[in-house]
Length: 217
Image 1 (cartoon, rainbow, N blue to C red):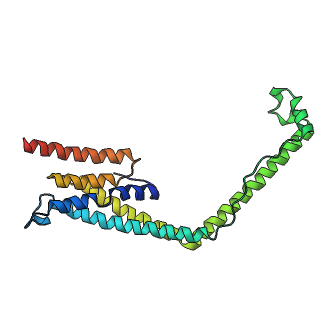
Image 2 (cartoon, rainbow, N blue to C red):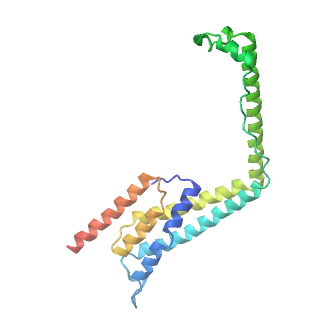
Image 3 (tube, rainbow, N blue to C red):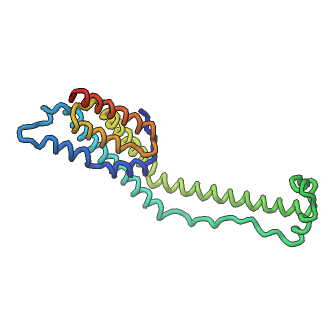
C-alpha cells in the first residue's frame, strides 16, 4: 500500500484519530487479571502502541519543520508587487481598432508603433519574470541555510516509519471487536484524499467483521 500525502494532510488526519484506538484497547484490558499477552489481539495492541510512538515522532519532526519555516520567514525579501501590463496609449488603441480582426495575430501586419508597444510590454514582462526567479532563488537559499532540507528529510523518514506501522496493523487480522477498533484507528490516520488506501483498509476490516460474524453464528 503506497501512501503519498502532504505534510499538512498527514498532521490533520492523525490529529483527528489520535488516542481513540489506544484508549479503547486499554478499556478492553481493564478486567483484573487480563494482560495484553493473553488477549487474542495482543499483536494489534502492541502495534497500536508502536503506532502511537511513531506518530509522536512524526509530529515532533513536523514541529521542527515549522520552526525552521518560522525562522526563515523572518529573513525573506519583500514580496514583489504584481506586474500589470501598462495601459495602451489612445493613439495605439486607435491604430489597433482600425485593423482587421484577422490581422491582429500577425505582427508583420501591425503598424510599427503597435508592434513597438507590444515588444516593450514583452520586455517588461520578461524583466519581471527574471525578478520573480531571483526572488524565489533567494527564498530557497534562505530555506537551505535555515536547515529545511534536513528537517524535511527527517519528517519524510518519520512519516514512512509511521505508515509502515499503519500498514502492518491493517494487514493483521483482528479476532475481537477491540482489535477491529485498533484497525479503525489506524485507518482514520490515513489521508482523507487517498481513496485507494482507505479502500484497502476498509476491505481488511470488513473481512474481520465477516469472520467474527461467522464465528458468532
